[in-house]
Image (cartoon, rainbow, N blue to C red; front, side):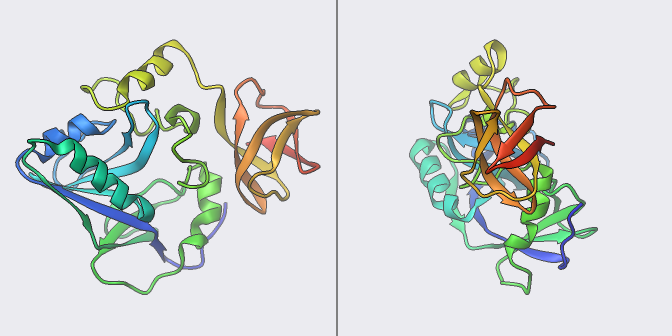
Length: 253
């Protein structure tokens, strides 16, 4: 298990506030997971998708008050999230704006909302003021060990949610309609993705390295630290397969 020297680490987060009498119903129609049922202070992971189920942004939706939500995403995605929601708002009575906040993760017991992205007890919080904290890259080994996909590495607009396992964590299959629902449900009930995000044990690797089974390319590395990597691997590759990455032995973990 990896360790992090600092107890508080800065997160590269972007924030969008959605508030008003229709905010809950509006987000329920727009996001892939149930949010209208959240009580103040509760959080649920969700996706904002295109009609073809391509990812616009992974989100954490926090209900701050009865008629106010905070959407937490990556720093570069806050503006696209706000723009997409504004275009779809029509007559919904809610205000949508990017919030100038700074995000932090406390490892171990602390205040905030639980964050399970790193495989250890951790709590996420945000503030209008910048606090003294370690840089985000201190969390990279924990993230890879936990198998958590990151935007720009494992996630972008070309990745299907099911390939990254987000259909298990960010999607409700019992809620009402939302953009992208039909392709998500069709793949879930009638098929499966051709590749999956997997953790790998390998001495060293670099993003973009081919993952090979004998001479056949069966995947590609997306993130790596010494001893561990993440990558998309063909679904038919067995868990016990002996793989190679850049000439080094690798195993699915």
